[in-house]
Length: 543
Image (cartoon, one colour):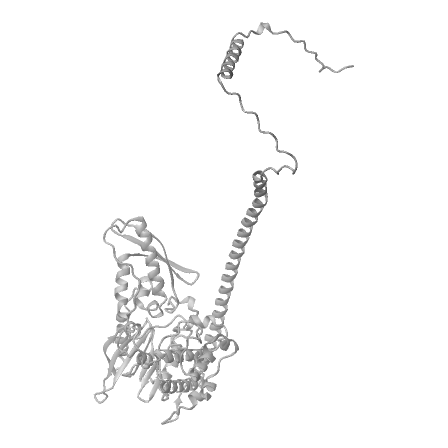
């Protein structure tokens, strides 16, 4: 089995969070251009130059989501002044910060194309249609009807409605195309051998693939279309074929007063999801892509879909959080953690945007709240989450019966089973290595921040000590100068006041005559009238 690292592949992880800072602006005479520095991690960064009209165009595209973003209004006159540009830069920075704080918008194709135009410059719909058309030349059983643009949240996965070539088959089908992800560690031959087993799954709670295959540029699959869509579509009361920004962006009312599904629905869907996970784990299959968008609503309950995502090396939506939780070391634990997120979303109607749940703000039934707390709290992850069999034994799910019309089956060839085992071991090893790297980066960041805090504290202490020394010297001298003279001892009379200066014309006249005589003596001074002085020189040594 050929293994290669993601660093050798140029395919990006679309779920990796980007950070943006507007560093400055430049006047290009006709308009002002703002300089955006975009970072993907610590080592990958680039600059993007955008004018205000580019922000307006992006905001118009995102209006379909229903979110109110703080885009500053346009100014027609005086929009090049230094103060105005500085203020506008701060307003646009706030706009970008709010935009990136919403996961649905931050992971959307328009935002990725706005911030990273070099890597998101392709029209994935047209490219996928070309690949699908070439594939269907050899697969005459189905034909494509029309594309469904951005039906899901994954950028590089495209959807097409399809129909069977058999005149007796009136069912509606959904065809998907997706390229290989950045974490694929299988070559094309092994991938084709493994994904071919997806058509042999027979389980009431797993969506079966009618046809599927792995080719050079990606993976194609045809499944029967579920008209109710996914559980997430059910939560948002949305039609499944609409754009994901329109389906999941609007803050609509949920299906119950609490904002989520009813307790019986959560019990039923939760039990069926756990049964599907238990079956896959018993076969040694690593899923790792559980979320409500991958849980289809069927006539008899729900079905898990997109089992091929992990085999194709695609990144899951919770990957960055899983990397920060080093206690999660296996795909079974990741599936349980993802199941906790599904329970939270079904209970509240909202996606959990943090790694842990806030138990104080969680409003649901006591039994459901206890299960969520046993999975999504820091103490639960540290001490150990419940396993899938343990969750199935919980009375909240055990009280909901499930019925199997036939025994679940999954025929996996010997070669494919070996590939699955090696794939699972390689992916879990990579998970632990990535978690170690993330932990190392966090420790270095904390050490750098601590060092900076120590330096700042030392500078503050130095300035404080210098100010203290000056306070010790100067105020005492000032106090000594400002202190009044001590009062005289008791019994001693105070000194008499100084005599008053003489006043009157006689004093003034006498002063004038004395001054005139002094001036006449100075004017009549002669040097030859001085007596000669005799100097007694004693500088010579005496013998």
